[in-house]
Structures are given as C-alpha cells and as structure tokens.
Length: 252
Ligand code: APR
Image: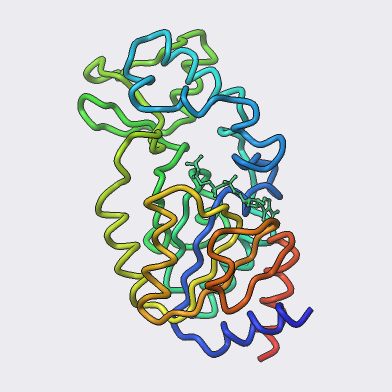
C-alpha cells in the first residue's frame, strides 16, 4: 500500500515525531472504544460520567464505580502491535512523545517512558482523593469494592475518591495540556492513531502541530474531520498498519 510507504518515508525524514492516540489504538487489546458501533457510549450514557453527576451524591458515585468495574475500563489489558510499534519508534530515537486521550497505561506498558507519555484525560489505573489530593493504585480500591464497599472513601481524610480519569465537565490537567501543546508546536511529524478527533480541547492539538509546520498523518478505521489536512491518511487497523510502517522504517 503506497500510503504505508509514504508514512514510513515521512518518519525516516523526521527527527521529532509525535504520536497522538485515542481509544481506537486499544481496541485490539480488548478495550472497547467510545464511538464505534458497540462502543462504550452505545452501552452507557456519557451524561452519567460528568463531574457534576459524580459529585451529586453517593448514589451517582455507586453507579459510576459499578459501571467502571463492569464496563471493561479497568481490565488488565496488554499492549498490542500498534503500542509496540510506537515503543520501537521511541527506541529508534525519533519519538518526541506520545500525547494520548487514553487512560489505560498501555503506552507505558509497551515501553514508552512515563516522561514521554502525556495523558490528557488522566489515567484509570489511579484513584485521586478530591479532598487531600492523595493518589492510590486503582487495584487497591478495586479490592475494597470487590470486598463490598460500593462507594470507597479516602482512608486518610475520608474524602471523596474519584478515578483519576478526566470526567466530562472537568478541566484537563493544565500542565500536561500546556506541555503537549508546546511539544506539538515543535515537532515535524504528527501521527494521529485511533481517534475520531471530536472531543476538545484534545482535538485542537493536531492543529497546533500543522500550524507550526508539522506534517499530519492519520491512521484510523473511519474518516475524521482532520483527514483533508493530512499529508497521508491510512484507513485500517492500527496494529497491522503500524507494524508494516515500522518494518519499512527498520529497513531504511
Ligand atoms: N485501528 C484503527 N482505528 C480504530 C481501531 C483500530 N483497531 N478501532 C477503532 N478505531 C477508530 C474508530 O473508527 C474511531 O474513529 O478509533 C476511533 C475511536 O474514536 P472514539 O471512540 O471517539 O475514541 P476517542 O477519539 O479516543 O475519544 C476521545 O472521548 O469519550 C471521550 O474521554 C473520552 O478520551 C475519550 C474521548
């Protein structure tokens, strides 16, 4: 496929590559995305995942904790071929960073160092206390939920515990967002993998990159609003495509 050749050439010619990922990169690891048929928002109402709802009382929190456990957002998933291809890009010295909307830690599990992963929407593997801001591993809190505590509170200050993912209506982590924008304005190739690019402010970031002169590439099963800005669009599955792309880069 000549688009694969085109993307591998763009990578070979680049010094600072940024990979921007959405839930579509993790579907091949068994984690459902949000807007594909059968995705999370076809089973749950996004309105139930607003910060206002979460803070409205213990009943709402009980529902959200139960949905988070049942909804497949907390599975012990493993990185797939696409995550490993990005980790190989890191090992090649060309990856400036990964900017991800995902909350599953799969980029880190595949070998991209923590300081090269900017998690715009937080991370579901951690829990934060809204009161004292202490953080705990999600697995610890899950044990308590499985032990029958339906609405866990902070063991230190008895404050409200919340999954450390960004809920609708909640501000994104400002320092992470600022640094992600700065990086996007200083890269020469910006590769989007597995995102509908419809949720802002995350979806602004590809524009920061292209307006600063970077080339845009999009690897996605379905069209996105940014396709016509891209130097290359590859329609297909991220694992297969990124493996083929890195196989070409390796030969260079
Ligand atoms: N390979 C390539 N693309 C894929 C694959 C795959 N294996 N599986 C799914 N996709 C594509 C889908 O076609 C879709 O365009 O990935 C995209 C996933 O889009 P969304 O489900 O909208 O996920 P995302 O873009 O990450 O959503 C952004 O919305 O609900 C909020 O906070 C949540 O971070 C999330 C944000």
